Length: 278
Image (cartoon, rainbow, N blue to C red):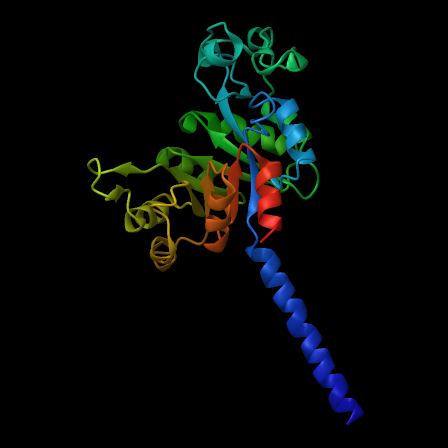
């Protein structure tokens, strides 16, 4: 009898442990969109460091090639919006880009923030955390990207590459097969008020298979992505999805219920608190 109780107790412990692991795996990562960009200047080291302080599991940054072929962290094709001076990133050497101020527009306390390189962003990612690298160019960025990642000795689990351009996804999977790559897509209504949105879940699944992506990152439309939509994705072979950009707690809870692997937000502290309350 004593041995039987012990076996039952041991089995129960295993079940409970397994349940705990499954529950933990189902929790979405909170990814800080361009860093904690609601509070700090986007795509700067200040925004990325603040994201970790606000409880983010990952950060997302936008990357382009400078005029001298360096991988730099900036969303727009030029510097006008964030720096007040217009320089085309692809035509401007890194040293010149560094002369601009990328932080003052968000507040005097951020004056002096510069345009970081991929290597500098990687350096502020703590062990166990993750960086989503959004590639804002075509596949021409991939060779330098691969060089920088190799030089930084990045663990494959620490980086996910994401891109809207299919050819860039294909190039990433070919050059960096150990890394996960997600294809990105927004949604457009076929005609105003029709309630018909494209791409459909079936089209997304077909695209993911065609370009060899490991998953998809989708615009976070709660009126499009529901349980049926997700089931169609999964039956089409899409193993995982993340959503962007989610700043309302109720939307975050919706996507967490659908088992998104990640929720990208400008407000990591707010979204973290809202999911912890579930």
